[in-house]
Image 1: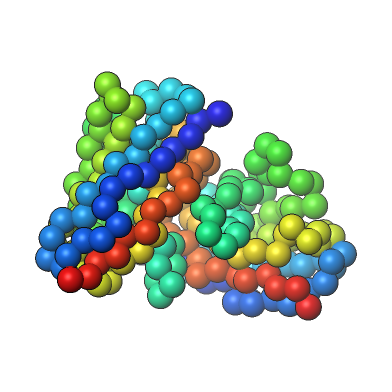
Image 2: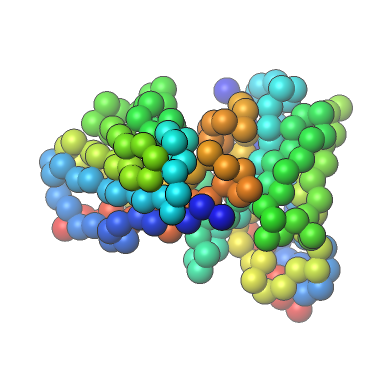
Length: 108
Length: 118
């Protein structure tokens, strides 16, 4: 299996801050990397696919970059509704698709 | 806007079979891959597998021997069966839609908690 490792596990930040979350793959997943946002009691919401392509309706303060084994999700100016848990997922290899363990973004 | 809704028992006894159904509404059922994913506090998000509308399946190798998925195109539904369950199978189960195997799931159901306990 491709192991996905996110860092940090928890991130404390304030409204207006710029934050970056990192996701590393144990082997190359080319650009087949997605980012999700999950709020308590809700299903994950797809934010970004193909490492850097923003889903329709997702605010432009979210951006993704990277390829092969290292990827980042950046939120340029945190808004109150952005405090949530974020997950990366590789879909380069469906034997099996795998997720990172999550990064909880908390209010400082 | 496509919507997915999971349904099934919330409590399953150990060694029995977990059965869930996902009903798709508001969109086409054909030409999509229909996916099951589960989430536990301990293991996080785990992909269980997908089934194409024509019945083609791929399962997570770690669950392959216990998983069966099926589709009912007449009802716009797809189903998951997980046999010989243990407490480790207690999770929130999500159904989701993929446009192809080369893109991530873009629409998810709200999830349903299944507890394995006697």
